[in-house]
Every structure is written in structure tokens, then in C-alpha cells.
Length: 177
Image (cartoon, rainbow, N blue to C red):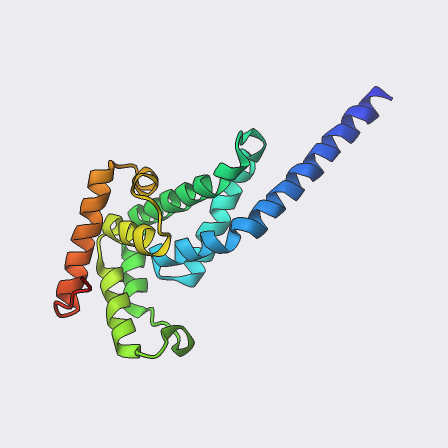
């Protein structure tokens, strides 16, 4: 009888953990996918990274002290997985950047400007691209973005400034002051 009770408690906990993970996925999944897409430029790769991020933290979900921190933890995991991918897959990433063209539905009204800007963002060094995405898309406070990148806030500000300078130069010097 004792083994049955322990087994029952274990399956109840497993079901609760699955339910909690499912709730976290429904709450944070699309944001993780968008972040991964903005960092990689490839929808398929972004889907893989977002899924890998959830798989990596699924085992740690029971040990998460503050459920509100899940989003930040997931964001950090996505950025780290993308960084690792860039290190391992430099040749593949270069090929994907050269050949990825957004669909017409994704482009919006000014297609040429969008394509030029997107190519400019894709051509940025990985840390500058991550800083630009965290700043302009994720709209994170400086300290939070610096934490995600594993650097000081001053380094983060420098990465954003350098990335924007490079984008302005590539876009013909237009400024948004």
C-alpha cells in the first residue's frame, strides 16, 4: 500500500509539473520565439532554439523560487543558446543570412527600406545585434539587458550605440533624433 501511495504522489507531482510547464509555455512561448527570431533571422532556427530553451529549463522548473522570474530566465536561456549556436555554426549562419528573404506578408509598406534595415541588422556582430534587439524590441531596462548579455550596463550602452552607428552608416546616414 505504501508503494502505491508514493507512486500516486509521484505521478500527481509529475502531472502538476507538466501543467505548470504548459502554462509557462503558453504564457512565454511566443515571446521566446520572437526573441530567438530577432536574434537569428531564421524562423526554423528560432523555433528550435525556443524549444531547446524550454527543454533546458523544464527540469529546473520545480526549483524555480519566483515564478515571475521565469520570463527573465527563459530570455537569458534563449540568448545563451543563440550565442552558442553562433559559435558552432558560423558557416551555416553566414549562408542563412545571405539567403533568407522575408516574405512579402512580413515586409509591410516600404519593402526596400525594410529589406535594407533587416540586412543591416543581420550583418551586425552577434553581441551588437543582441543589444539592439533587447533594447528596441524587448524594451528591457539597461540593467536587465546587460544581465542577459552578461556585461556591464556601460558595455551594453556601448554595444547599442555602436550597432546604431553602423546601421545609420549602412542606411545612408539617416538619423532619428
